[in-house]
Length: 105
Image (cartoon, rainbow, N blue to C red):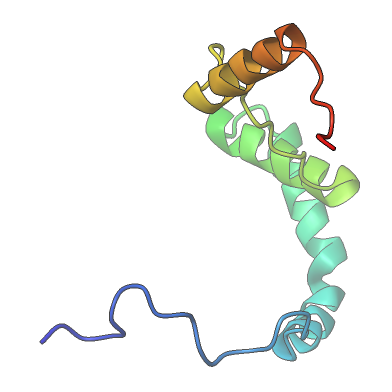
């Protein structure tokens, strides 16, 4: 018998939705004093012409993330309409062509 819960059952246990992780603030407090040194080290790597290009790019990226936050990920839209979109368009066209329904008395 496979381990874990059977497929199709709802998730149970864990934190309730909206409950904050209790360890994250503690870790942030412990890491905060190292922030200036870490940023200085990244700036040193970024400015070092002898550092590998990949390390310089990674340092630049991290500094930008610290300064401005991570960029929002772009959601690519499909270039062709989906089957559902085509069906909705066809229904809209049919509804536009048909006379309005009147209540029968």
